[in-house]
Amino acid sequence: MDDLTNFGGTAEERDIRNHFHAYTNARRHMDVGPMIIEEGSGIHVTDNSGRRYIEGMAGLWSVGVGFQERRLIEAATRQMEKLPFYHNFGHKSHGPAIDFAERLIDIAPVPMSKVFFTNSGSEANDTVLKMVWYRSNALGQPDKKKVIARIRGYHGVTIASASLTGLPYNHRSFDLPLDRVLHIGSPHYWREGRPGETEEEFATRCAEELETLILREGPETIAAFWAEPVMGAGGVIVPPTGYFDKIQAVLAKYDILFVADEVICGFGRTGEMFGSTTYGIRPDVMVLSKQITSSYVPFSAIMMNDRFFGPIAEESDRIGTFGHGFTAGGHPVGAAVALENLAIIEERDLVANAREVGAHFRARLEGLKSSPLVGEVRGVGLIAAIELVEDKATKSVATPGRLGTMMNAALLRNGLISRSMTDAAAFCPPLIITRAQADEMFEIVAKSLAELEAEEGV
Ligand code: PMP
Image 1 (cartoon, protein in one colour):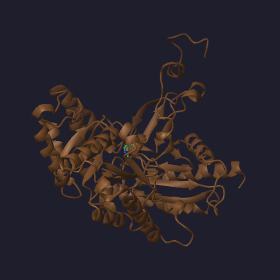
Image 2 (image 1 turned 180 degrees about the vertical axis):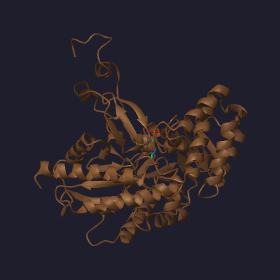
Image 3 (image 1 turned 135 degrees about the horizontal axis):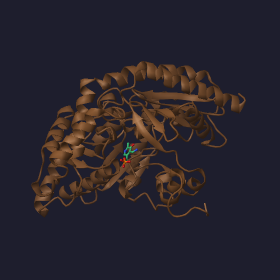
Image 4 (image 1 turned 90 degrees about the horizontal axis):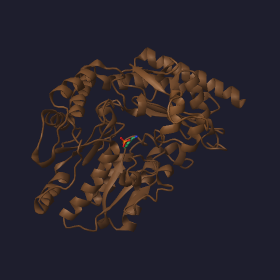
């Protein structure tokens, strides 16, 4: 590295020299360098050596309609030419934001009242937490400010949203979480369920844990509960039978709001338009991003019911304005792309495709359970994971992350981009994937697993 000049060199060298990567071991990156992706088309991406991969994670759980979708490119271009920027501060508005807010209210899984626009999942969750506090003040409940999220939950990385996130990497050395953010255990039946406990009994125990925490803190101090319908970054954790019914019964008893983080689940991923529908969740607030524009442009939205919005509107009237908003919130190009993206999802019925191709793909993954290295296969719609273990009886591994890293490397070698979360290999391909492509993806998973078994000598 010492003999590199400041400019020039290969793209890899220039990346190492200048680019501090997200979610990367920053020191190690200087030794291993980047994987540079140059182009995407459909469910595939191509690297700078010309090698093509199936993007088995749809980028970051996000490129729903696939890469190089002309209709999104044209929608963005048309909007750029007409009005490349405008904002919604101080009563200003524009067509794409009005149209998309109306479309969201129209497809909402429960009656919703208003949409507030932001630019990322993190910003949206931060904004909701501020709204929760603002609302409690509006209601004359200044002590009702604590919120409850879950271990393994993922809600983003800004100060509030990283606090909501329940993963060690997002807290350690960042001096987080904030002390108003509390966590209960994750609904990971396979990992956390006790011997002999049914899924339903485990779900009951999760709800009891929530109630115990509420009573310990004082119900009058708890304002909201946060949950992804399916936990994504925490390891693709699908809730056990009855879980959300039991959780919602507790929340109703103590007048606690439900915030559904649909950043991954929203727009078809679970085989319904929203994960809330899949699991019978009746949220007060929904957080949407990622597949909202298939990530072609940064965009996110918060949908809320009248119970949530009403007091906030009153408080803003008392103060004179709602003192919160982002320059690019509701960006016209983002809103135009979001409208077109939703039109594509509806016209091609990609929700049904996620349901049908997802069921087929997951059924094939189930067949891998006979491997001595596969502890669990889980998923719903077009999101799935296989959990790797060294010892199936104890569900244990000596070095967490070792098998996951090896599996990830094998999948990449064989042409599939996946993501390992500790020892779970996740799959979340674009919603447009066909049955034949899902079979191709499965064959790579099976081949990679066989190679891993050989490496492990099992
Ligand atoms: N919520 C969930 C459920 C997510 O998966 C993510 C991103 N992985 C976020 C929030 C944060 O979104 P962003 O990275 O756009 O800030």
